[in-house]
Image 1 (cartoon, rainbow over the protein chains, first blue to last red):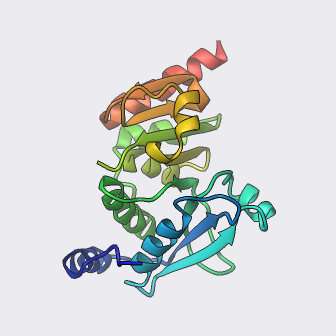
Image 2 (cartoon, rainbow over the protein chains, first blue to last red; image 1 turned 180 degrees about the horizontal axis):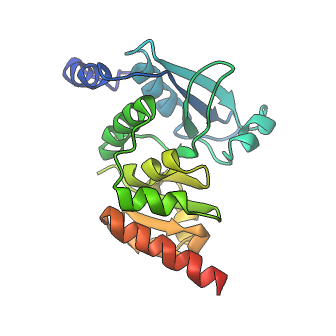
Length: 147
Length: 70
């Protein structure tokens, strides 16, 4: 398959990744059963994580590793989780993606990796105090298209 | 989109899924997605269409929680 990231884009991403601080693990869940976009998604994530030693990609199977998938609340493929840390010390923040993060989603992905790595949300004081006061779970689904 | 993920990073009670709409048609229909981006709060308690500023999304989440509580 042709590479997603051309040299120009790679250079840009590498520049952003200079600010990475803590390790970040992407847990990808694919499916052997029926998954039109799994291969593409894994390839893109492989290319991105290859650009920094602080980024780890774990490839899992939704059906064969259903326990792990439900632990991370992943129920569709392609789906992936952006988590803090690596190995035995993975922290799940509740950040998930479903589908190929191409187009405008690609920038969001790179931005998310940096944000998780730095553990800096950049949210306003008001938002932070609202979040600190939450007592019930909040589930957000953000539907978007690549263009 | 990144906004919801930033909220998830800050609170263990927040979970945020970025969904590529064209690949998950059934989900799009189930949640009556009319325009993108759309943020669906608590499985349809409230929907926010368009890219909205931070304080607006916070206000919508507050409303969704209040409506569910009353």
